[in-house]
Structure formats: structure tokens, C-alpha cells
Image 1 (cartoon, one colour):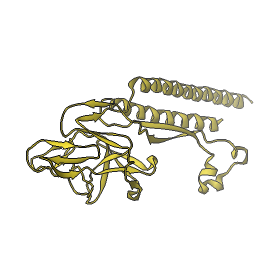
Image 2 (image 1 turned 90 degrees about the horizontal axis):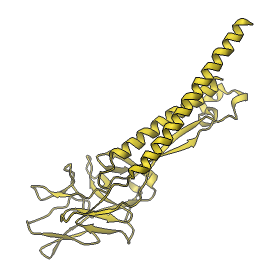
Image 3 (image 1 turned 180 degrees about the horizontal axis):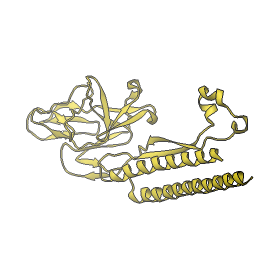
Length: 253
């Protein structure tokens, strides 16, 4: 009976984590370039099979029983709609890939789809929070002069007819290697996982990519999760009541 309580409790924890993921998605429904998180539910094996250290505590009658559910996460990299802004330093990607920006450590590359860039007082192309946008050479992009700039489909930046720099773009071998670190930025678990963007990826100047969140779909997911949460809570209540009845019968006997 206690085993059933543990399974229902695991369900509650998984659904609570799922609701947190959905809430974060909805909070970023208007964040440019945001990619929604997916809360992926999977069945969990018995602890004896998942953790070798638990072999000493194996219970034969429960060994083939499941371990309830657990939750994992991944990032949905579906293309978002483009919004025209007319700003020369606003750029968006059509296709796979990310813009590269400077991390805290020297040589560290972070990834983003948020192309709302600015030119600071030092002539550096930066993100809204001041991080340097990197070029193909891995160095910060510098815009010299005050004349108008153009950015072509490959990310090449020109000013006054002369090439100034080229935006550094990168993709990953496996999206599961991406980790969100906040501020609409992502990092790859393994820097070696970064690769060149596909040839069909295009840079669009004067546009930004909308958030990949559909508020209506997230509301539906949230209601489904709430029903699953309630069902697990009721199962805990039922099993607790049955345990009380069993204890009462045991005392009478």
C-alpha cells in the first residue's frame, strides 16, 4: 500500500514540475526569439534497476513493478514568426541556428535567437543586456562610423559599401545538448557540439523572431496537467483512507 503512495507522490512531483515549465513558457509568450521548453514525461524503472546501490534493498515481490513517472525537458526549436521592425540592427534567423554572443569566460560562446541588437557608445554590437555579439572570427563585432549599415542574408555587415564584419552563427549537432542559462541565452553542454549552420539558413535585417510560445496551447497543457495533479492527489487520499481502515481492523483483531 505504501508503494502506491510513493507512486502517486512521484506523479504529483512530476506534474508540479510540468506546471512550472508551462508557467515559464507563458511568461515568455512575448519574448523575442524565445524557444518554449517541453516537459517530457517518461515511465521510471524500479529503483533497483536504476540505481545499483539499491540492490541490497531489493524486494522480489516489487522488483518488476514500475517506479512511477519522472520528468525530463527539452527545447522546442520550431521556427517563430518574423515581425518587421525597420531597425537596422534588428536581425532574425530563418532556419536552424543561433547568433553567438560573448559569455562570461574568455572564448565562451553563448547562443540566442533574440536578434534585438544595439550599437553601444564604443561601437560594439551588443545584445539588450550589453553582451557583445560575436563575429565569425569569434571576436566582438565592431561597427565603425555612424553611417547606415546593411546586413545581407549570410549575416555580412556592410557600411558605406565596405564589409565591416560577419555575424557569427552556430548550430548544434543534437538539440538535447542545449541548456538554458537565463536571459534568453543557451549554452551547449559540450563546446565541440557546435557546428556551422545549414546553408539554407538566412539572416533577415529589420526583423525579429517572435516567441515560439502559443498561449492557447500552453493553457490547454496547463489544464491537462492540473487534472493529472488532482488525480494523483485523490489517489493519495484514497490510499491513506484504506491504510487507516486496515489499521483499525488490525487493532480490533
